[in-house]
Image 1 (cartoon, rainbow, N blue to C red):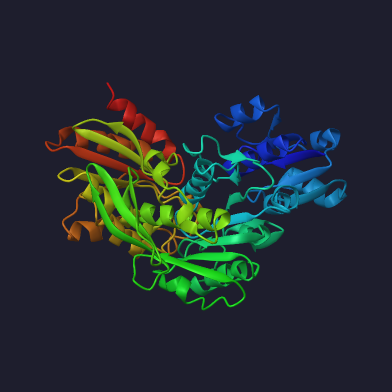
Image 2: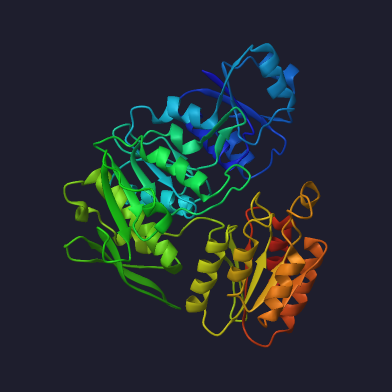
Length: 472
């Protein structure tokens, strides 16, 4: 089959295109930003890329199926041509995966407000390290496994990141509803994506829909410490394993300790002897990601005795790029990039850094960029989270002109609140100007500095520029 991907250079779309190519289909696609690294990977795999969207060209290419990414909307010239002519069948990315990749597989769907990408990578990594050849689709750039997508062996599980965001402009269901889970991992649940969900109850509703399609011989692996998940109630139609730090969980994370030399914790499977883990991934939140991944992988392989899963390989797990990724490591300055764009993620990461790097000045640099972060919906939470830093820098609100002032993230108000707490806070009209302040202030500091950038975008390139300025 000849399959055409609209928005092919996005991480999820690009990895899905590679899966389709690996499955033997002829694959091509278009995007407005055809650039490395994804463009290089796609071209190397023999996938033809086109710049921009052109309905005349699309008609001439005559694909059998068009996959419309969820970044596409009405008004796109190719979308409008497809709707006007009905000349070519079209589908969403999740529906394509359901029909061409996931059908007939034992699917492990990793869901949750936070930690999906890391937990998906961990699950695939543990399955591989335990001698299996799982398929997987990871919504980021993992270091372990060394690629973001792999078909694997049909008899082995397929691990997929289950996003609660909608599927396409014509399919407003959450992506994970398409993924037919044998094992559904519910990492956590909070209000996010205010552009598509009305409130927390609306988010809980879509997660409940996911649980209802887990078969009776499947499993729900859930964070037993999360009140918003517990509010979903019981799941009598299938089997449930609860994971957490509390005594009431089936699998417990115990004896967690973090220090400059790393992290250690025990995983206790009901009444079995604990399995100890020592690794370099920061924070209790990553220990929880590892526990959820270990339980999911163990149930997929050894449901009668999940303690058979070997966890020693976790000491070698290198994580995912842009998730607490250390970019510069010098005695006087450490630079970290993180994909954090929700208050809980920022707070947990900053608290972890305190334990990992005692005595350093922690500078948090935050870009209000996601569709929720750039509004006032979670502003109070961001103010609280940034209060765990010693100094705070807030970038320009992304696409600020498209928001009413009454709805827009109020940078000055957040700065004022932080300064009332005795925390120096800065902003600037442009991210480039903010970079100048950051470079000057960190250079003038007498104590060792740690700078962590929080953004789900590029931050206008200032992260790389800051690292380059301090490598001279």
